[in-house]
Structure formats: C-alpha cells, structure tokens
Amino acid sequence: NFHIHFSKIEYTGGGEKKHLTFEDTLFGPDPAPLMELLAAEGLTPTVICESAGTQTADALAMSRLYTGFLG
Image (cartoon, rainbow, N blue to C red; front, top):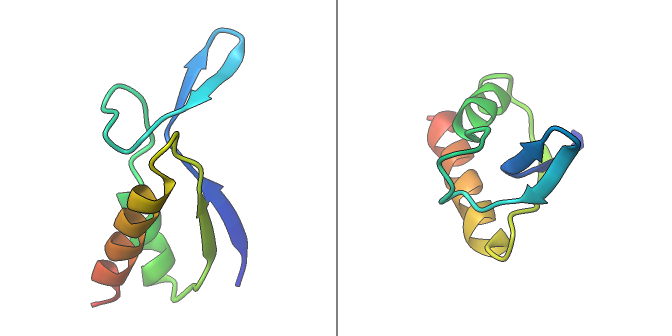
C-alpha cells in the first residue's frame, strides 16, 4: 500500500547523527508498535530497513514482528 523507511537513529542537538542497529537500546524508536499498527489496520507496506550494517537481520526481525501481529 505504501513505502516507508525505518531505523533507530541517534540524534544530537544538530539533528540526525547516524543510523543504528536494533541491538541499540539507548536510542529508538522500537519497531513493535509500528508493526502492530500496520497489521491491525490490514496494511501491507514495503518497509525499508536502514540499520547500520545489520539491515538484513533487522528487516527480518521487523517482518517477524509484523507477521506475529497478523494473528
């Protein structure tokens, strides 16, 4: 239905500093609430993962979250 980009991002006073991995716990956001909302609304988005160096693993984690919320 639509195309979005998602990653955890470290911000500074000057704005976006860098993309992080899902293992990072200091910066967010958590992808679970977004995946839950997308599934609850019956949406089928294309979500591009922009994690730093772990795009494949983090994209798979988002896919599993989304699928898990489909019930």
